[in-house]
Length: 157
Length: 222
Image (tube, rainbow over all chains, first blue to last red; front, top):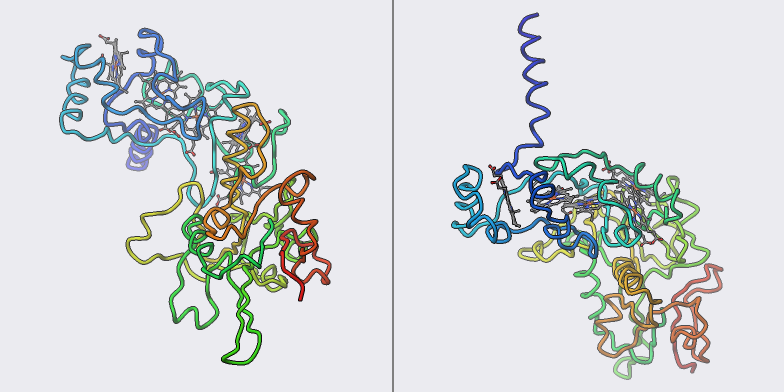
């Protein structure tokens, strides 16, 4: 009984952490609330193209070559930048290949769907978490409410 | 789509372009001998006359996107249907591989993934990210390069203008060196395809079956 309890406890402790397993503890909150960066400053094509994109390490180093350079997380960042590689971020959102879904950010930004509708309260998040569940139901119900297409071929091809 | 048979030289550039644009798996000679080939477009050859006075005619055959598509009503899971734009669409993740649609297609343009698709090295590195890779057990067929249609519509919407005639070019149309293939909107009476479809040379493949195909072949009558 005690073993079972410990097992359950360890599972409960580990599972919520899995997604947060990022190589660097990047705080969205600091950069948005304190530094006043916009989402688009880093996710540069979130308003125009299909993919929002994650910023490359060189963009981080524009500031962090000087700013907070003595902090442990920034030292990790500088080490990655010096190695000439990219930060191996873990993907948070995304669909299985088998689902054959083609999502595009562009049309949503043009129709003024806020980032928060699909990604939750990122300005107060540390590393990104799947705050909002994405599945076919959430896509379709909003599309029906907004007279957007619910034809299968809009999203699957 | 309009295909001018008097221009087609049977070079198969369209077949190659289609394969690479749409991540179509490669068959092997052994599988091909059992009829398990994967093509969304093929070139049919017709011979006229007796050797050596022989004349070869070519006809590229792809999904005709029939208005009365025989493949659609037989699908038990509605994986193939007509979308509002008039395309005959295949929803891969809905497909359970019954093969009914392919059996009912008079043009035999549907191809089935008997196995997970394979490519000879290093071709597995050149997949088109805009097209999903279909797993084994799924039926597939020409989409008129729907990813290109969506892309152009997206760009036009972003620029706040309508899609221009001829702006959408499926891979086969783009690659045709003889410019034998033309793609456009048949619903628009002023489009190039609509004008060509009214040409005296216009014919449709196996029209007598009542499938109302949307590919028009231009061919001089003899």
